[in-house]
Amino acid sequence: METLSGGRSTGIYRQGETVVRPIQEWSATVHRLLRYLHQQGFHACPEVIGMDTGSEVLSFVEGDTYNYPLEGAIASEEALISAARLLRQLHDVSQGFLNNVNLAETVWMLPAREPAEVICHGDFTPYNVALSGNEVVGVFDFDTAHPAPRLWDIAYSVYCWSPFKTDPIDKMGTLNTQIARARLFCDSYCVSNSDRQKLVTEMITRLQSLVTFMLAQADTGDEQFAQHIAEGHHAGYLADIDYLSLNENKIIEGIC
Ligand SMILES: Nc1ncnc2c1ncn2[C@@H]1O[C@H](COP(=O)(O)OP(=O)(O)O)[C@@H](O)[C@H]1O
Ligand SMILES: [Mg+2]
Image (cartoon, rainbow, N blue to C red; front, top):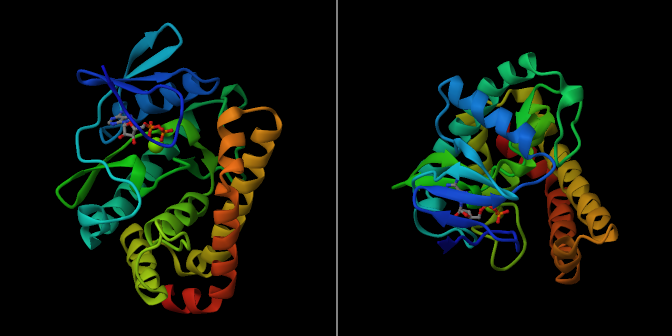
């Protein structure tokens, strides 16, 4: 059994062609979503194989995986374009799920946001996708999925893929290359012009909401979030909020 490393401290293992992950309160809802996506012909996400005591068993999504710093295939324009197209497909297919479920019966890790246009992945980032060569062909880690407007997910993805990050390990390129990548992501997803105008504000709101969530989780005694706060992860997001605010006009001009 091979331990898989990601952002989580609890055990995630690969066992043959499956991945074993801890069950969470929202796992049943996420399983409904994953099953629905496959039924509709969206096969770029894990399949639900079953449950084992305290764990979920999912299919392994084939492909190469990456993390920051973005180097090699994950930093390519092809990866960026294919990621944006995959997010668009995921959102489009997820609309049918919303029409088929009673939202009151669903449980999500992150609060649902109005209007519930699609199911957002919640963490559609370079470290949660699988690549074949330079092409993004799969996405995993649906724990953060939740109903929300498309722009909510696009905002976090554009922030992570451009990336509009200031941390020395996470940052890549100049502000101009980041803006060019943000524009390419928007073009590949086909983000409307009116949504592009709101994108920087949405990124900032999304990051503020992430910091609030991290602090609240740490406050309730969640050790993993408490450790992230102690290591200053939230300070990184706050610095990125400043970076986005400072450059808001230039970014909007460049992506519209
Ligand atoms: N279904 C899957 N298919 C392929 N790889 C996976 C799958 N689930 C997890 N992984 C691998 O395990 C790592 C950690 O799992 P992930 O679900 O992303 O949790 P987290 O990021 O919270 O640690 C991922 O970065 C990825 O490399
Ligand atoms: Mg992950």
